Length: 170
Image (cartoon, rainbow, N blue to C red; front, side, top):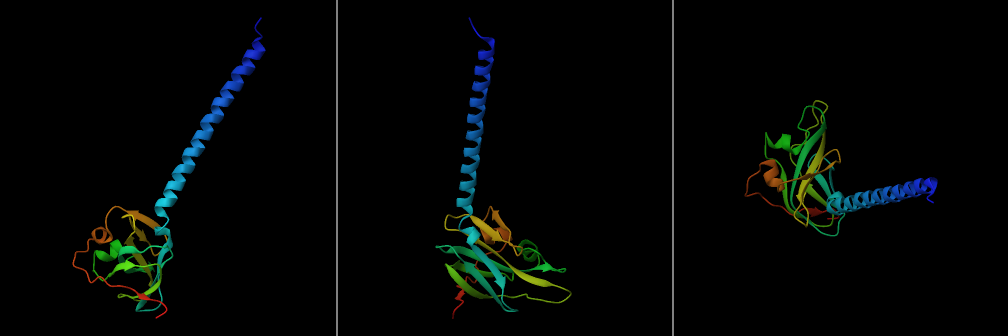
């Protein structure tokens, strides 16, 4: 004879096994997606910029490879000035353009630093990584993936005076 209690226990065990399998599969998929996202952002996360003084900015590429078509803007984190390169590019094209940023720490000349009316300047840097993806490191530190080349993103036209940054130790 069949034991109904044993049948119910077997059913519960089967449902639990299937549930655990589904939960495990979902966790694996989430982890794979996170690793893929991390790999896509790996080089971009290692690029940053900041002001050293009124005329000089610092650029840091902690990755093992250069980034390309670098666009550097002075923006403001406080006050009535433009807060992003997009806002700044609507009014002027005083961005510094660098052909590439090799691994290491570099200096670059900047324009547009103004400390009036409680303005607090900072730098924004946009670039293309070695795999052709395009990024912006905001003055706030946020890293944003963009769909187009930095020049096209900001509406800047070619030709540009593509510079090479000066190594910081010189």
